[in-house]
Structure formats: structure tokens, C-alpha cells
Length: 442
Image 1 (cartoon, rainbow, N blue to C red):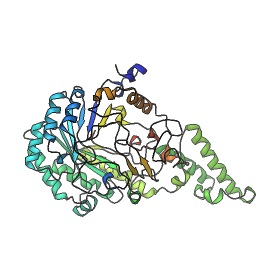
Image 2 (tube, one colour):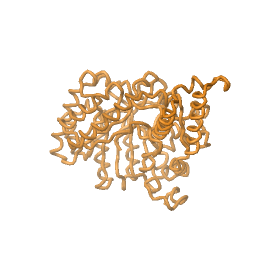
Image 3 (cartoon, one colour):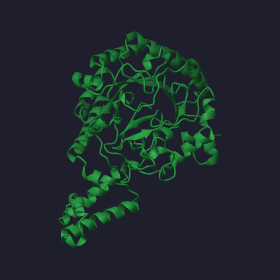
Image 4 (cartoon, helix red, strand yellow):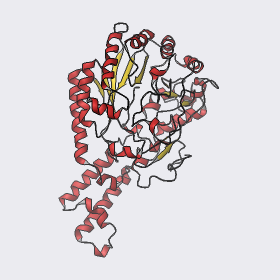
């Protein structure tokens, strides 16, 4: 029985089991592309390059007896590892028949011979990065990549299915302002190439200049709903909530009756937000590009209709950050293994890097609970430290740094995070993965 189960016998989801249900294993941190949106291209990234050793992979095998999924990628290109097929073959023997093995790839090295080799080894899923249906846009977003190479890769996968009929191919589309209009055309292109599924993920802005390209607003769904309702209420009485910051710092005796009603309206909205536990930043709410947000919603609706028509399994992100947070990685019982054997809890804390996901620069530190080789993966998974981390995350008792008017504060705007304002030792309050914006093969 795991430490987590001992602490709370009522817990029955994968995070409480004595072994992880999903493993994300970084076969290599090297890559053959220089994509502008990648963490590897961002100053401040603390990710050394290297390849997973045979010894480290062998040490993971005892934990694979009940795996639901093994995902063989991290921040590098899996096809660069010369032992990839060997890893897949050994994992296939160790895992249950119902468990699947897959990876995400830029596809440049996926020719017919490599696809047959992967299929023969027992690969189940491949997800290729395709962010545009236009060769020009694709080339601009994936420096060194060509859409024609993706067509070659899909042709190779179609042929490889003769060896392994269950092999599934799909695409990942990183959504940005400049490629939103190509989403539906890319789904059509993918289906024509034989893709069976499509993942759509928002851009995670690592560099400050990437902020202008993100397609989601700086406010949660709950905050937007609250704001819109109070805005409509104000309009019924001739009050324009957009003038609040022009009026707020006026002396009370100098305000007009309409301005006083505006101050009272915003005060009422703040009271309701506090009562309901909704974090919001009025400046960010006022700055939302509503026509573009509507365009995202309409595009998503069309994408869902089109996917159903094409028979394509589509997983879309939220159009706005979800107020109800859920960490899929912890909930699914996942563990993340770096190429050097270090064990991490999630994508967010897998590597050290700087990002601007919340609109301000944040230094994210990798969180490791040990190294495979020094201890077994199961010993690390069931350690008091890792079990306590998962238990704390699942309580969801951490602040909404993303929507906080005081952020970035000294708790999180630091190179050495120790705790947040709720005295939690996990920096989950500033993570947007659990708000439904970013997706991966999982």
C-alpha cells in the first residue's frame, strides 16, 4: 500500500496507487529543429542535452507491469535516439496488453524503413507536430521543417500499418493568433493523410515576445462570466464599467451621480467575487480582445463539427483558462523521467526554464524526487516526499496567481521558490496546465 493510500484510504484514483499508471520518459533532450515556440530556444532554460541510457531504461522496467501508457518523449526529438525501437520492444514485453506506447515527433526522420521498424517493435501511437496547412506558415513556425516532410511521414505510417494494424497516427496543433485561421484546414489535411486523432494546445509563451501570439485571455472563465454579468447590469443603468479607472481615483466630492453608481457597481462585483472565491484583475478583463475571443469560440465550434464529419478524434483546449482546476498528470498517476534518470511530477516542473504564461516573467524550477539508479522508481514514487506532493496537489488549495492583482509577488517571482502565499511548497498556483490550456499526448 502506498503512503498516499495510508494517509487517506478513501482515495482510489491512480495517484494513490503503489505504482504510476503513466510514464513519460525523455529518451533524448536533443532536437533537429529550432522551433521558435520551444522551451529549448528560450534564454534561461536550464536543460542540459543528453540521451537516456540503456541502464536507466532497464531500471524503469519493473514499474511497467501495470502501466496504462508509456510516452517516450520530453523536450527532444525521440527519433534521434538510436535505441528507440529497443526501448519500445522491451517495454512492450513488460507492459500489459492493454497499455499503449507512443511519442510525439516532428516527423523529419520518419521514413518508410523507420516506420516499419517502429511498428515491428510494438509502437501504438505517433503524434506529429503540424501547426499549419500552409507550407509558408509551417516553415515560419517550425524553423527547419517542411510540410512536405509531414506528408512523407504519414505515407510511411500508412504503409507501416500493414505490419501493425492498430498503430494510430495523429497531429498536434499549437494554437496561436497567426495560425488560428488554419486550424480547420489543418484538420482536413490531417484526415486526408490518415490521421485518426488531433490534439490542439495553446502556445505556452516562454519568451516575452511570444505573448502577443497567444490566443487565450488573461482571465478565468469564472471571472469573465462575473464581469460580463455586472457589465450588463451597469449598462441597464447607463453605467460604463470601462470608465472605472478614470473615476476610481477622483475625490468622492468630485464624482457625478453616474460615477458614484460606477464605483458602487464595481464594489458589488468585488464583494461577490470574494464571496465566491473568484480571483480577477479588472484591468485584464477590460483589456480582453472580445472579437478575437469570439473568433476562437467560432473556430472551435467549426473544428468540432468538422472532426465529427471526418471521423477524427479531436481534443481541444479551453478557449479561456478554466476556473475549476484539475491536474491531469497527478490525477492520472503520472511520473516523468528525464534522460538523466531524475523523476518529476509533471510537464510544468520537468525542466527549469523561464516563461511568461501569466503575462509576467517567471522562473520555473525543476522538481525532482530522486534519480532512477540511485533508488528504484517505485521507491521514489512511494517516498513520503512524492506522496505528500501528490496529496497536496490534489487538495487544490493553492492561489490563482494567474488572476491575482498582486502577482507577480515575491513568493513566485524568485529564482528559488520555497512557498506560495497559502504556505504550499508546490508552485501550482502559477501553473496553467491544470486550467485546460495546454495539451500533450497522454
